[in-house]
Image (tube, rainbow over all chains, first blue to last red; front, side, top):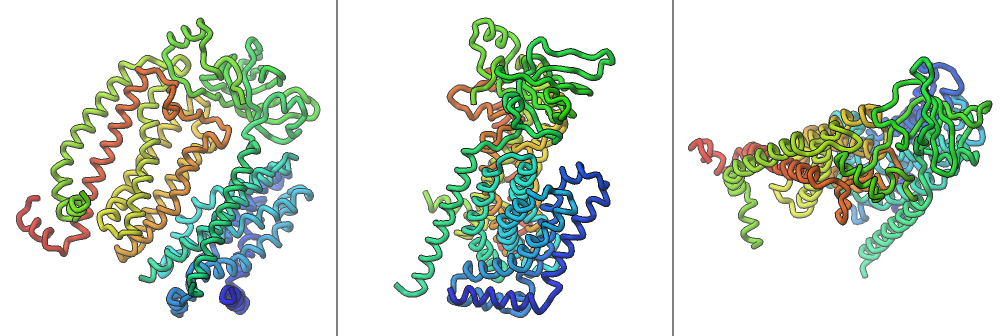
Length: 221
Length: 155
Length: 247
C-alpha cells in the first residue's frame, strides 16, 4: 500500500513541476464549452437543452487530450520498464498512475464545471448534480483512457489513435451522465442514471488497471 | 504465504468486491425505469415537464384523427386506454401512422394549453410480429391477435 | 483429437486445407443466398402492416446478426492469441475485422433505408441503433490500432486485447432492447418457443442468415490464406509454394 501512495505522490509532484500538462486540458475545457454559445447563438432555451451534452463532450475531449502524456515521459526515461520489472503487481502501480491522472485532470474539471454551468444557463439547483455526475464519470474516463494510452505507448502518432480507440468506450458514460443532468433539470428522478454510472465506475475500477497493465506488457515485450 | 502471494490475493479479492458492487448497482438501476417516453397517464397526472421538450408514447385513439383544411396539420388523441392527451402536429406522417397504432411523438406541453401536446416529430412504433394480411385478418376475427396490436402492451 | 487439431492449425497445413474446402463453401453460400433471396423476394407473402417494404429484413437482420457473430469469433480468437499465442488465431482475428465492419455497415445502412418508410425517419438514436454504431466504431478502432503498430507480433497481441475490452459492448447491444424501452421492436426470432414470424417468412430469413455465415467463412478463408503467405513469407513452405506455383 505504501508503494501505491508513493507512486501517486511522485506523479503529482511531476505534474506540479510541469504546469502545462494539467493546465492545458483545463483551459481547453473552458474554451471549447464557451465556443458552443458562439456557434449556436445565445438563446437561453437552446443553450439549456444542449448544456449537459456540451459540458460532458468537452470534458471527454479534455480528458482525451491529457491521455497521450500518461505514460510518455515514463516510457522515454525507462521508468515504465522498471515499473513492470518490479516485484509489485503491475496493475496496482498502474492504478496509482490512473489516480494521479484523475487528480490532475478530472478534479480540476469538476471544480470548474459550476462556472461553465452558469455560462450555459443550467439551473442553479442542477449544478450540484452536474458535479456529482462528473465526480462519478471522470474517474471512468481516466480508467478507460489509460487502457488506450497503454495500447499506444511508444507509437509516434499515438494521440489521434487513442481517440479512435477510447471514444467509443466513453459513449455509455456520456449518455448516462448527460441524460442524468437533463432529466434532473426536467424535475425527474435520476436515481437509475446515477446507479448505472456508479456501476460502470466500479466495473472499470476492477478491470481497467488489469487490462492496462497487460497492454503495457505487450507493448514493452 | 509469501508477502507477494498475500498481496495478490488481496488485490483479487478487492477486484471481486468491486465487481460485486458494480453488479448490484447496475441491477438496482434496471429496477427503476429509464424512460424513453411518457405515457398519457403520466402526462395527465402532471409528471411531465412544462415548456420542455419530451416524448410521449401511446396508441392513436380510434376515430380521433382530424386533418385541418390546409391538409398539413393534423390533430389526434394519444391514449393508453386510461387517459387521453390531445396532440397537434404539422408535417408529414409516417406510413405506419394510423388509428389504433402505437406512436411516439416529440414535442412540448405549453403552460397555456395544459391539455394539448404540440408535436415537432411523430414516429410510428412497429411491433415485432410479421405475418401476411390474411393471417392477421383471421387472427383478428377469431380474437387471437397477439397482444400489443390492438391493446396496449402490459408492462 | 487434439493432436489432429494441432496439426491442422499449423500454417502450412491450414493453408492447404483452406484451399481445398473453400470452393465448396463458396458454392454452398451461393446456393443458400440465391434460394433465400428467391423465396424472400418472390415467394414470401407481404406483411399485414408493412406491405412489401418489410422484405429488407432478409438482408438487414442477417447482417445485424453477423455483425455480432463476427465480433464474437474475433473475441474467441483474440483470447486464444493472448493466452496460448496461437499464430492462426491472431490471423483469424485480423482477417475478420474488415468483414465484420462491412456487415455492421450493411446492417446500419439497410436499417436506415427501412426506418424511413416505417418509423418516418432515417435514423433514431435508440439503444439498438446506437450500440450497432458503437460496434462499427470498435471495428474501425481495431483496424486502426492493428495497422498503426509496425511490429506485427505486438500489433496482433495489442489489438487482441482491444477486442477483449470491446467485447463488453456485445451484451449491451443484444440486451439493449430489453433494457431500454425504445422505438426498436424487440427481437423476433430469438424468442424460440413461439417465433412471432410466419413460417413462409422465417424460412428465407434463416436461409439468408446461413448464407451470410457461409459468406463470412468464404471471405475469411480467402483473407487468412493471403495473410498466412504474407506473414510466413520467409518460411520454407512458402518459398517452395512460390517456386512450384501451386498449392
